[in-house]
Amino acid sequence: MSPVIPIRAPRAPEIGILDLQGGIQEHLDHLERLGIDARKIKTADALSDVAGLILPGGESTCIARLLAIFGLDQVILREVRRGMKLWGTCAGTILVAKTLVGEPAHLGLIDITVERNGFGSQLDSFAAEAVIPKVSPDPIPLTFIRAPKITHAGPGVEILLQIDDYIAAAESSDVLVTVFHPELTPCLALHHYFACKCGLIPQETGGPVLDPSWKTTSWTRLARLP
Amino acid sequence: MDAKRYELNVQLAQMLKGGVIMDVTNVEQAKIGEEAGAVAVMALERVPADIRRDGGVARMSDPAMIAQIKQAVSIPVMAKARIGHFVEAQILEALKIDYIDESEVLTPADEECHIDKTRFAIPFVCGARNLGEALRRIAEGAAMIRTKGEAGTGNVVEAVRHMRTMNREIRQLAAMPVEEVTGFAKANGMPYELALKVKPLGRLPVVNFAAGGIATPADAALMMQLGCDGIFVGSGIFKSADPARRARAIVKATAYFNDPARVLEASMDLGEAMPGLEIASIPEEQRLAGRGW
Image (cartoon, rainbow over all chains, first blue to last red; front, side):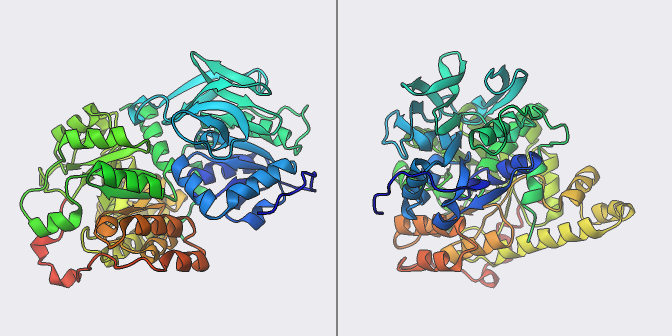
């Protein structure tokens, strides 16, 4: 991959979801509820002009491996330099972190330290609720599934939600990270917030926080049988 | 398990979508699997091909071995309990692994009852040959379903049969007027409320993986194109000539199942696949898919 001059390329008013492994349909469903154009991204070409990219929850070792095999990691780094915004949820947080406890980092795009699988096994997965003032004045449901912990945020990183001894959400100018899964709850506020960050929705329009028509099976409409 | 715990368990399976879960029998294999991009490993003492060869009673694996594997990898660890053996399940829950497979690959402990999975906080995946079987397991508390296939054969034909059967029954259910559902559910042994739930969804309400006989990248892509959400590979990896290479190839083909050029690339130079078995050559009483009901 040749070095690229970091100029701001024109970007399509769309959010991409990295479609290699994990909770892809869940994010797609949330973006459609907000009326935001979204596309699943499997190749470098599809990635080259989206305004924002979501790295979904899944297994970070699997997604990292596929990113590296197909050179998509380099394309993501290039597009972030050219103005694409990134949102990592759960495993996505691990992929974008600058430092991982006990192992080499992957994309290294935000100055946070992340501890993989910070809570324990699936029996320690849990749901909670918290207010994230910068995102919404209303409480937001939080779903943690074998979640990582952000243990440190460096300069240039704003902490959006701190719980006990760990950071659950943070952002830099280019990158948003949440160790929980808004796409597994009726909450649209984080997707709305990310769309604002990508310049797709004006900041002042407060979107709905909870979508009462969302169900736990809503993702299945995007994963029908052939 | 309360409703919220069940929801979290179904959601963990959702996060495994598009991934490959690999059978491993020791720490070294678990690390090879993780390195290759497995989304989870299934810890067991012998892969199905060896269980089939050795005969005898196959039980839950030594918990010390499962604990070592849990220690060695950061991806989810699953392990198998015998059908109906709720104490093996209690032990695996106490061990705090991530998922239990109530599996026909082990010798059933109960020929009448499956485990009442609603009593557990830990999630269960169960095998099914058709929609009725899948919905009965979900009614018992399974948070994830897989085809049974015919494990340890390296022959994908039974997994294909099970997936096609489920798909056909779901399509029938989706198309019929609601007053026909009662009779359809009765005839196919489906819990009525779950049949009503599947009807508008047009698919299972939980994640459904392929399992049983998957040996090549092409097998994995085939099952994905038939509508499976992900892949279990049992003997297919560590009974092949070059397990690490084959594991990586199956991960690639599963992620890019709709892209023949990438599946082709993944299929190149893998060395020998595991030896395959013709289903007709297996005596009826030695077929695993018929265990459980």
